[in-house]
Length: 306
Image (tube, rainbow, N blue to C red; front, top):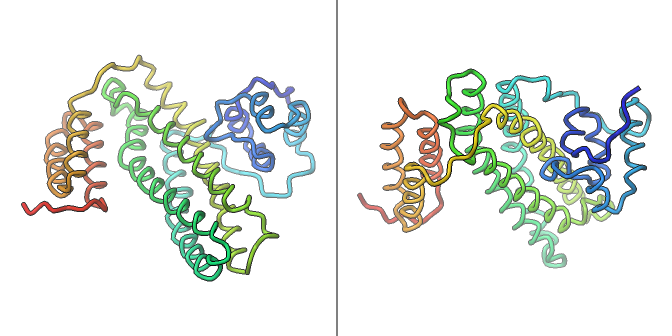
């Protein structure tokens, strides 16, 4: 028989231990991903749930009992290597988002065009989703260009932990928290994705798509926050380095140059710095490479004529 559930255990740990619990957490709206560091007791109190009742439901899931009418996750991230985790996140979650976000945006455009005059809140849903999409596109690009190569390098021993950017793990966790807040706002604006409130078949498809998107993003962030980043943080196992590095200063200056309308010039300088660092400082070089790609795709006005 599985052990009794500790009410002081974190939601993230409980989800990582036994992935089938995730379906229950989704149903109860317990934040096991962005807020995965909260204890079960605290999370239940915030949601107005009885912790003992929730513990019993978790234990029923662990026993394989009835009550889960949705497929439970078969992927067990704790059993994967760091490299396998990174590959899974890209192939399943990142590529899935890249395919799904344009489809949701098209559905939103149609629903706003047809129903927006009578339901102005739909425009707020559209704007919030567009903001979330832009944030996610930038975030997953940085993960693939900087974070994941660093994670693989640490596992393989090809990257010295002392050379890893201070605050890399904390920064990604902070970005995940921001995504979680925006995702929660999107759900509230969309009426909790309640299908009975659908205005037409297209609106119903939109609500179903947003719900699938939210569920996948929860699992995506959970696999990063509660498994990948925890494991990589343990590999680093070193005190943070105080103060900014020269690369930190350079990146800040290049961003300011881009904001001043000279994104093309900033991108070329980032490329030169990358070329100079890639042999001796591969991790710092990857940061500049990521910046270079962001600047190339930057929507900032650019009057650089050089």
